Image 1 (cartoon, helix red, strand yellow):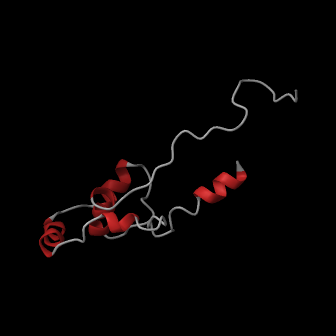
Image 2: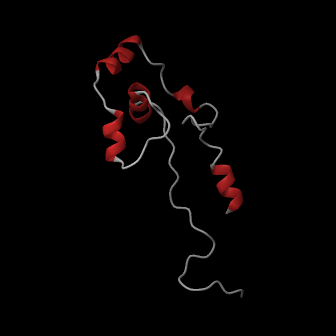
Length: 93
């Protein structure tokens, strides 16, 4: 489990970019028209942070935050279990 955790920690950089080669090649480049749409939005990062009862921690700019949530690929890890998942003590057999 330690090795798996270490491997999973390398999948996303501290700036939020997914480190899997080629993943961003599958997303069309942002157009001038699309970029302009983001500048017209009014979005309050403080309200977002309040709604999640914390801080997004990565994006201080509203446009970057919205693009990360709406446009760019994201990575989630689900369903990791250890080798022993039953209630009680681990017993060697």
